[in-house]
Amino acid sequence: MTAALSDTAGTFKIAGKEVSRLGFGAMRLTGLGVWGEPADRDECVRVVRRAVELGVQLIDTADSYGPHVSEEIIREAIHPYPDDVLIATKAGLTRNGPDTIRTRDGLVRLGPKAWPPLGRPEYLRQQALLSLRRLGLDHIDLFQLHRVDPQVPLEDQVGELKRLQDEGKIVAIGLSQVTVDQIEQARAIAEIATVQNRYNLTDRSSADVLEHCTRHGIGFIPWAPVAAGELTRPGGPVDRIAAAHGAQPSQVALAWLLARAEVVLPIPGTSKVTHLDENLAAATLRLTDVELGELTDADAT
Image (cartoon, rainbow, N blue to C red; front, top):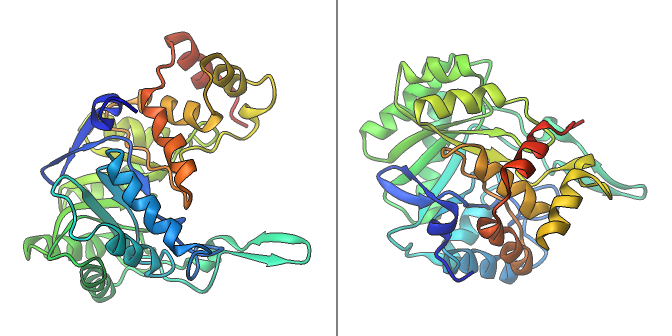
């Protein structure tokens, strides 16, 4: 890419830092099922370094990725961190083991049962302090509640993050996989900088949350951003638009997200440098209004 990523993807301010809207999600810097060490740790270190070289300024991780492995790799790769790079992490999900296992019949996904939520205030505080240590930071620019624990009042969970913020241990507070009502409950306690919900071409169940974030200037971080499902079938809209631009389907999916609203900050993730380069090239892909309309109106089922 000849232009700076911040120029091609646009920017958004979080925790006082103006960051490129196309970031990097670090969940895949782990083993199968987001569990344990990756198959090629050295390649994962190269991925993080390459992301920063290409202009990525938002790197999103979590204590539960590995667990701990992703945060440790990020530190190994780029600590001490460049001043313009924002490391975002999360707490609020524990791990019962890998969420995907390999059997004789192939890969079996175990789903949410491998990620039970835990939002007790003392636990969230402990995890924030451990993330500070693993990442080698004296404060976390963006600390996100990974899931709302239904067994703990939301005000207690967000209230603890507010206390950590008041103590200078975190700068900005984010939420993940929440409803509009939960966002407003949280905003009564603390300023909410970002919301991270699943949102892509085939899953638009958080469209109301995106609209709410856009209206209030809250950063919206869509996870699983490149999922396109049946829309990538031969002759389908993503396939045709990608062919017209000499692009990959993943690039079309990311370009569509970047065009949705100025608050959208996609964080495609990978453990391969070649795939990283491909994802970030989406910042230079300009879809026409007709193409954007076709993708928006497409049947995502």
